[in-house]
Structures are given as C-alpha cells and as structure tokens.
Length: 200
Image (cartoon, rainbow, N blue to C red; front, side):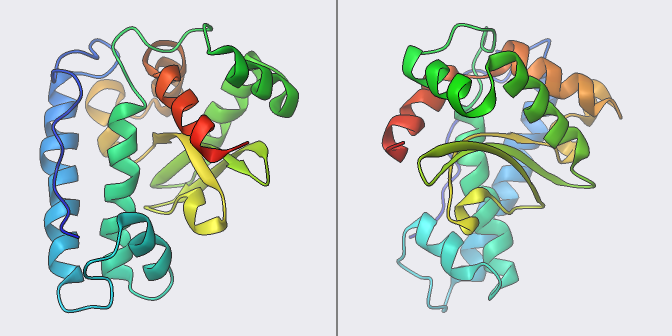
C-alpha cells in the first residue's frame, strides 16, 4: 500500500478561530505530507509493502522505528482531520455514545475534563485518546506517534498534542487548545461511527 495525503474534509479556514488556516496549512499540508513521503520511502523493500495501514502500524511497532513513526502518524492524522468539524464539540452526542460515556466514564463533563487532563499531562509530543478496549471506553495518552491501536484497543477519538498542532494559535497554552478542541471542534458523528465499528 502506498500512503497518500487526503484532502481536508473542510477548507483550511473552516475551523477558525479555534484552529487557524495557518495551522492547518502547516499541519496538514507540510507535517502530514512529510509522514506520507517518509513512510512510503521507509516501507520500500520491507515486509510491510502491500499491507494495510493498520497491519503496518501494528506490525512495525517496536521493530522498525522509521516505518512505525511515519505510518503511525499517518494513521493518527487520517482520523484527526475527521475528528474535527466546523461548529463541532458541545454536548449534543449520538445517544448510544452518550450512554456509553456516562456508563464507563462518569458522564460527558467528566470525560471532557479527564480527556483534556490526559492531553495536558502528556510530557512532550504525543496524543490523548478515547478508545474501546474489551467492550469498555477508556481514556489514555501516548507518546509521539503511538496510539491505542498498538495496545490492543480501538481509538475512536484522539487529539494531537504535538506543538505543531497548536503553537501558532495558542503558543504554550496547551490546556486552552484542548478546551477549544472539546468545546468547539469534536466531530461526534465520526466518533460515533468508529464507536459503532468497534463493536462495544
């Protein structure tokens, strides 16, 4: 499989003021493109040629850092663009997802606080996550390009806390970025779609 950079599902300025046009131009057009280019180069001539992205991410973890770092970040970002939408966030969730968040995580407000805390608490570069593992929702954080996928879970929401995801707009205020993500950007319909596929 050859990686390709997808177009954003919205215009570069569609998420402003919470995520600026300039951020998306750098983050999507430059950073994500680099993961695609470097990943394709790293995979050439390896056992991972011709495999699906999920197989490459799982198979290269802990074995081939060049392949994993780029494939992992390509996987994360393919979802990240879809985990956001204009006028997203808020408290109107598909009912089955809201019910599960209440059951497993103590309600939407507690989820938002704990999810943001995971992102704030990730030292250096990484991600915070909502995923399904053994039929239950859980919040976690990972370093660099790792995701719950390599720990036997299915990610259904993630927020990129690498500095390039927020520094242009928020400088060092990562908590403000995570608050804006939860309150104004999350595409709950896409989260619900992945939740349905995860079979929780």
